[in-house]
Amino acid sequence: MKNNAILLISCPDRKGEVATIADFVYRHNGNILHADEHADVESGLFLMRVEFDPKDFDINLDDFGKYFAPVAETFHMTWRLARSSHRPRMIIFVSKYDHCLVDLLYRHRSGELECDIQLIISNHPDTQPIADFYKIPFALVSVTKETKSAAEAQIHALIEKHCPDFMVLARYMQILSNEFVNRYPQRIINIHHSFLPAFIGARPYHQAFERGVKLIGATSHYVTEQLDDGPIIEQDVVRVSHQDTVEDLIRKGRDLEKIVLSRAVRLHVENRVLVYGNKTVVF
Image 1: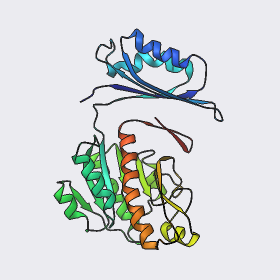
Image 2: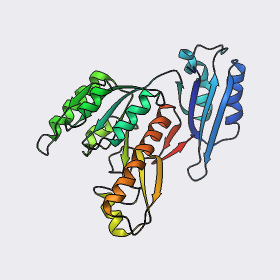
Image 3: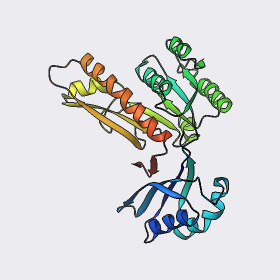
Image 4: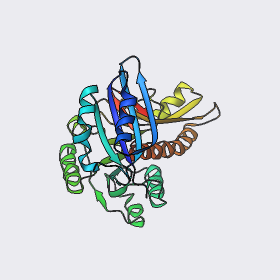
C-alpha cells in the first residue's frame, strides 16, 4: 500500500506559490511525486495538489501544520493534508434500483475503491440480499411524506454511530432536506441520470425522450441545498437515436450511471477533487 502525503491547496493566485511549496517539501527532505495546479482567471484563485513521498521527511506528518503555517499565512491558503494510506469510511444510500450499488460493491471487493463501506441504508428492503451477499450491514429506514423528518433523524443517528467520512447516494430516490444536507458539506456524492444542467429533477430520461436528444448523460456531483445543482465531479454521455424508446434510454443510461458514479467516488477517495464556489477542479 502506498503511504504518500497529499497536500491540497486553494488560495489567491500570486507569484511564487509553486516555488515556495516545492521548496518547503524539498527543504524537509520530501520527494514530490506528482504536482498538479490550476489558476482560475475569473476568480483569481489558485488550486494545487501535491503528492509527495514522506519516507525521509524530517517533519512528523501529524505536526505538518505547525511548520507549514507560515507558508499558508503568507499566501492566505486554505489547505489540508491527506494520506494515501488512509481508507475513508463510506455509507451508501439506495432505493430499489440496484445497478449503481452492485457496481460500487464489486469495485470495492476487487480493490479498485480503497475505502471501507460501513453501512447500506435503504428506504426499501429490495437490496438487502445484495448487502448480505457482500457482508455489508444493512439498515432499512422507510420514508413517507408524513415520516420524512423522523426518518432523517433515524438516518442521522446511524451516521453518528458509524462516523463515515462521506456518503454516496447510489440512486437513492429521496430528496434530502436542507437541514440534513447542510450538516455534511462536500461529503454527500449523488448520481443524477442526466447530463446536468439539462433535465433536472424526476424522470429525466422521459424528458430527454420527449425533447428528442441525440445524447443522454449521467452526472455525479456533491449534494447541496439546490436540487441537482451541486459542484460536478464527473460526467459522461452516450449516443442515442430516434429509434430508441424510453426503455432503451433507461437501459443505456443505467450503464452510464454506474460508471460515472464509481469514477466520482474513486476521485473523491484519492483526494483529487477541489471545490471552489459551485465548481470543481479534478486533478
